[in-house]
Length: 380
Image 1 (cartoon, rainbow, N blue to C red):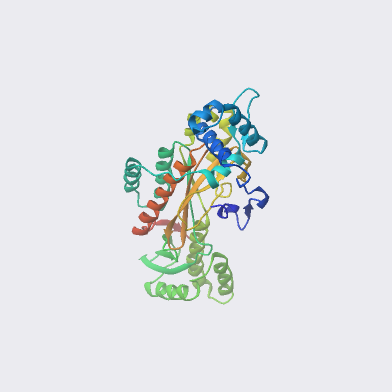
Image 2 (cartoon, rainbow, N blue to C red):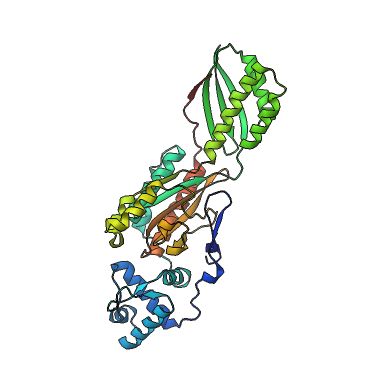
């Protein structure tokens, strides 16, 4: 995962966030005993959210050395930036650098129990049919499973085009335009006209649109419309423009990446956020979050990705960690689901659960085609 985590796509144009190579964390300079001590401190802190002392480490790690030796090793780990001491007389807590080494080298695989897989499978079986509802429900499932705030979003391919136009006469002065994209998204719109139109006119219009306005991006559609405007009959162009601009609206809609959030109040259940002064900024950020503000790793690879504390681009996430996994929606579309919480997370367990949910969503979305939207009305 080390190389994969060097870069996180921010979903804001082509802007990227890179973790400098200087910040790559390796435990090569640490002895095996110090690695065991670091791992023990992290595991105990994850469980109890309390600073960890040398005596507790000795009992937890079962090291055949004295507490004084462990205390000296912990002091070295603090000096090297892997541990922090919140108060002079207190034990130590992990630093972001310590968490990163743990995730990269020390964290073991977490095996989901039969009960956990059954809970996830049961929740995923209750899927909705519309894409937005599926994504929203997935976020709720993850928030409930992990007890952390969850977010979910989808991202279409970089280039989405119109595959086909269909025009259906309703009555003399109204028709339905149906648009299908190359991602198999279908939208339709009811248009009312101030003049009569015949089925043969609509057939001719459909032929023209499917010949000259398919396979084009939104900007390319705009240019083609401008070109046709210079040559077409005004009455004919009116119908062409109506339908083509509806197609452009569909492409604009698909280019948006709405973020679905769930379980934001779960933050208050964790010791780090029981102070409303600390919890409120993060809760506000998650309530207003857009896809450009969240780190994202949209890939076809299995497993979860982890962004720890200061590795996050957004200032609101600098003291938090984000764990996320991507899934396949088919037709070149990807989805992302993740959780936000304190750096004191059980990364192995959260990663395993997210990866399992993502795999289930990929299977669900690969089996069911999405239905078209309800017809909207437009008047001209």
